[in-house]
Amino acid sequence: MRLRLPEAMVGRILLVLVGAILLELLGNLALQRWQERELLSDREIGQIASRLTDAESTALAHHPRNRGERLRELAAGDLSLNWVPSTVITDVSASYTQLQHLRSRLVRSAPGLTSRELRLTLMPSAERGERDLVGALRIADGSFVTFRLSPYLGAPPDPRMVILFHLLLVAAVLGIALVMIRALVRPLSDLAAAADRTSGDRPSPVIVDGPAEVRRVATAFSAMQDRLFRAMSDQTEALVAVSHDLRTPIQRLRLRASLLRDSEAREAMSADLTEMESFIEATLSYFRSGEEEVPRLIDAAALLATVADTAADLGDDVVYRGPDALLATARPLTIKRILANLIDNARRHADRVELTLRKDGPHHFTIDVDDDGPGIPLDRRDEALLPFRRLDEARARDAGGAGIGLAAAHKAAAAMGGTLTLRDSPLGGLGVSLTLPRDEARMPA
Image (cartoon, rainbow, N blue to C red):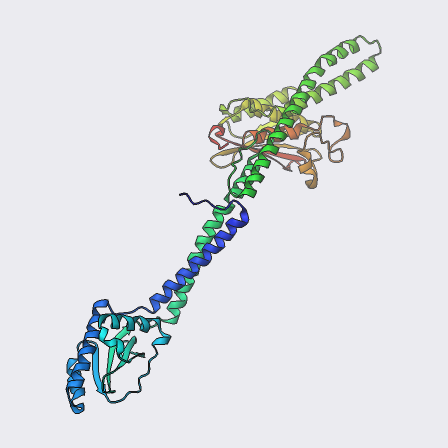
């Protein structure tokens, strides 16, 4: 039959506490028994009982003057015997479980001792530091056969050793309890990890496990995640569809604007239509994260040099600095799209743009895009990475743009397993660092 754990979190915590207490109790009992361990076997107990019976018979068979000598002759090994007419030995067996157990074993080995007064006590051993058994057996004439067995019980352990063993026991109990608690909270850790793995366009599978409360939370989280991603997917598809559908009327408006005789109105309408097209293209770029592209082997240095030369041919002051070659397994079209957004964002507010490529450890490479524009204040850089945010205070108000270029680049970088950070540029403006894995195909999902 399989043992089932309590369903509720409280029940499992109570189980851990009860288990820890029981382990501590059992450990203490074992430690106590080890401290009070007996040193006699059943065979030795039987021999002692037999010698006591023989000692009584010998004492009664001889004159009191000779009894002590005769009993000492019966002694053997660690057992010493003597006869005295009276004794100060008192019985303390009621206070010691070991002595009560010993009495029962002696009577069981020699039933003739049942009717005799048997006094048992403990005394420290003279040499060994252990404890001797001292006893007195009242014989038929009222005198006593005394005996001493050295040793009977092991010496009490050093207090420092006892403290050490108790500390080790507490450490063992705590260790086992921590393992049990870790197993108890592991489903919560898995749920938190699943939440952290959830990205803006990819849900993370949730394992429903653990106590009843955690399972309910995991189930609710998984259902909420599915609802959110379905809603996001529907909204994204709708926005992309609208963006595509707007291109046709924009082209018709552009054609009609070209037929206007008023050149000033024609140019104003053409500028407005161009801005609308730019906004639509930026929106589509934001939702194209690059996941549809398969990573392949590219020369990142050649790619950056080509991007810089193309921008320079269009009249922009863009230069490339870096190695002549740097191989990486990445998505070239997505990287070009990111660089296009970053360069377009930079040239709107700056005169000079520098592209720098460098290795960033054995597994990553970094592309730095620096400009000499006004930059973005430190306290607003996180806001600049949000979509549809135009920081007019930091950038020129008449620079145009949809406020989505940095957000699209940031999202695409995350989709490739990289990061995009904003910083101060050595040229005095804004610096953007794009760090990507050199082998995206081998990066963990």
